Image (tube, rainbow, N blue to C red):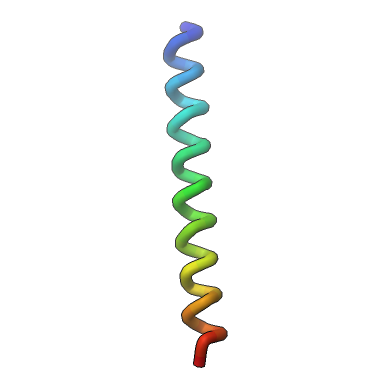
Length: 33
């Protein structure tokens, strides 16, 4: 149970980090023009 929870949290952190990266990239692209 513990390991699956850790894995889930790890995946969520990765997912949110990826989303944040995409947001930052979109923001940079929008404001570079």
